[in-house]
Length: 60
Image 1 (tube, one colour):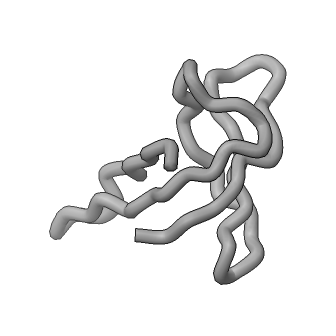
Image 2 (cartoon, one colour; image 1 turned 90 degrees about the vertical axis):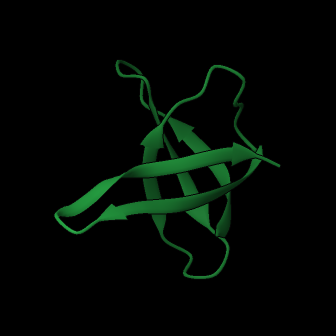
């Protein structure tokens, strides 16, 4: 699991950007209704043998 902070929302799509605490890069994730800019979240890649399935995001 990695952690980060919500830093921006897309104006037209239900997605948001979080900045990873460790690598200091932005990660694109689906926006959960309860998220606000500045919220701390943890996230984890969900992989299968065929590739990336998604990213699990939880508010801290």
